[in-house]
Length: 179
Image (cartoon, rainbow, N blue to C red; front, top):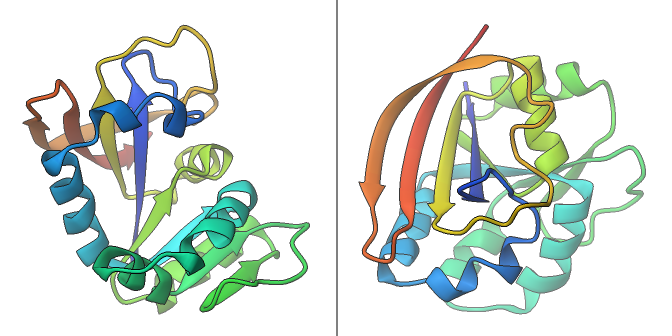
């Protein structure tokens, strides 16, 4: 049975929106090592519609070891409005949320990572379907923007690992126990 792992870039004040605008200046070999290790742990990706559309537009044209692995993964997009999946290896999940995600976890042998997809991540947390939360927490305070944990329900988190990068970024991994 698969585990759903939400992986997000967040500011110190919990903003996860538009990380491409504030996280790139912190990218270094430690960040790359962390994300490469995560990718090696993927059995599949689960994405919300907006993130899926952005990734589907950007990733297929990229090459190299990381991009090749990323593109080869099975991808599942949760959407009621997407009519087709243009990115190779993609499936649209448009049925009942709980049923679709439970079935995906049951039939997947390995970890299913959720990248970005704030609304999807919040729904997975609120419904008790997420198993782990991986946060790269950046030393910035943004003051506004969509926060990852707004509307995410109630849960107790168990810190399973933490690492401070030299650039001030914290890599935090939590196991999730729903309340």
